[in-house]
Image (cartoon, each protein chain N blue to C red):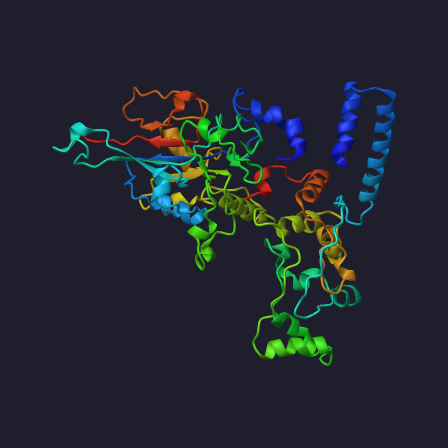
Length: 208
Length: 281
């Protein structure tokens, strides 16, 4: 939508295609585009225009049905408490079982999912979580840079609200049980956000 | 390069050389290779294979010129008078020339690409985007150094049968058949070095980025660094040899100056300087 808006404004500036119909069309599209832009600008994260676009991915089966809503929404645990590497690494990281047991050796030990977890822990078994958000192998993506830009070096942004930044690409995980892919995570999705937020536009920044 | 760049900045990227170079370069990665130190041991080439997921194609395909060696060791028997009786293989050995993509500032491969898969980055690198490449091979035909390599086949299963696929470097893709590839000056290492510098809140300094070949060279013949950094070792070497970017002919009247760039008379303005091998007559 940013592209189409730019095309139209350029064309009008040069005086090409000044026919009445095309003018009306141009007006219509620019109004439409500006509505989108205003809607995007209303996000709660300061100094950021989050990307739009949705995609409903398939449910990914997990060994334990981990409820993100209970942890992040009801109990208000920060995303980065478990996904520790997000702020300093390429990958956000899946927490080790020991991190789960840090709380769950005491909390809610009678629940069936926690019993399953305890079983894994006592048998010294790794929980083989399945990957939900997977970008292709030819893409270089780093969580660190994005979190630094939108959270830590973003004036007016509270680290406690980090989930709003995560939601740019991961959707509202707070309302999900098992995480589900709800954003397209394709090149157009990335580039629209990069253009709106002055991200790098060099091919080799992301393609490897 | 996004759509925005193609529409708005294309001429800017293209014009760069005629106007004396890209004026907003963040870095200008370059190399200095001392042929006096080079023993032709091929360790750099091996390191490159390991670092950049290069497949081994086998003897037959190598003979057909389908090898994928981003860094190849060229061997010359160019001084037959110095040897003994055998005129073909002289007694005192051949001369070696490690050749990798020269990252020309006026790269001949770039303007001929029909899909803009190869272009110049603000780092002074000649980039190759595999996803965009359609395999027309124009770039390879236009490269005077023949340093671009084409994937005629898919080598994944042949070259890295399980469990060898575990050795692949995850920081760059494994190219499939139909795309052109070439030395990237270890872009994945440059990326890592720049990220680390940014994390520590400082500028990239000399030594942050070392390519696989430079790191492996046992005699330290290969020196890699940023030519815009005045304190970098590579800049000092270029300066000592009085070689500079944008000048197509070196003054050879002073016998002490050994620096040259391969085929620089073609005005490709490469970023790799070689220092001539000196031998006793």
